[in-house]
Image (tube, rainbow, N blue to C red):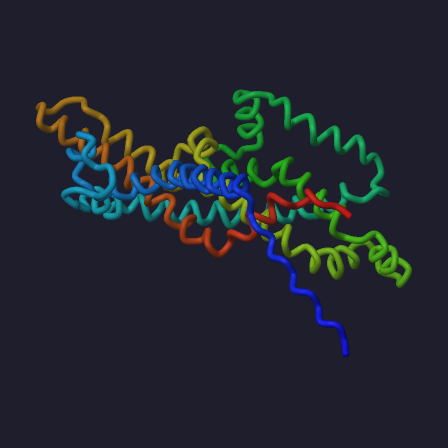
Length: 301
């Protein structure tokens, strides 16, 4: 008869382990509340009575629910135009960024690239030193891009950090033996990149698309500097202009000024919700790609 296997003894947590786990749970719960409460407060403040918000009465739940702020913003045609512009800028940025970042990252990951160190230095220097706003504006102006959509899109199509992240992915995830085998079979550089490298790089392509899209969606500085035509304004800049206009208290009676102040206070929270809803709705579907982006290049065989 075969010997019966001795039952495994369950590992019991010591008192010290239980204390450690308890402290960990408490700390994590506190950190969770610190992160989530500001978001929750913005949501409930966006449809609470502005007077209650200003008086500090809105803490855990909304009071005197009103959707005046949402109606004021959503009834404006410039909001929807801003949404359309932002979607266009984001789509163009993602497409052009992938066309630039992925091939450049693959090239920098190859040991056979001529003058590789020189290219690396060329990309590293702008990470630490910049020419400043005036030279940047002069370059864009000399190219004839001021007051065009390309003044918003083109400066955003390459992030050196994302380029190095892509390079690291290729170095750690694409086996050299696979490239050598394809070369022996007669595949050229373009065939290897298009038929072998890209199908194996769906993770980094998704991560880069996500990073560029979120960055462009939240961006407003380039548009504020280079655009004068209000029909070209992205959503973030449109909301900024609405807030500035609503906070203007010049002229009018004291009651009118108070109403403008109340409305401006509510519009602050409403504008955050309006601009963040698309990203918040998209995030659950792309959360795993954020995790992949953080881990890319952290482990290497």
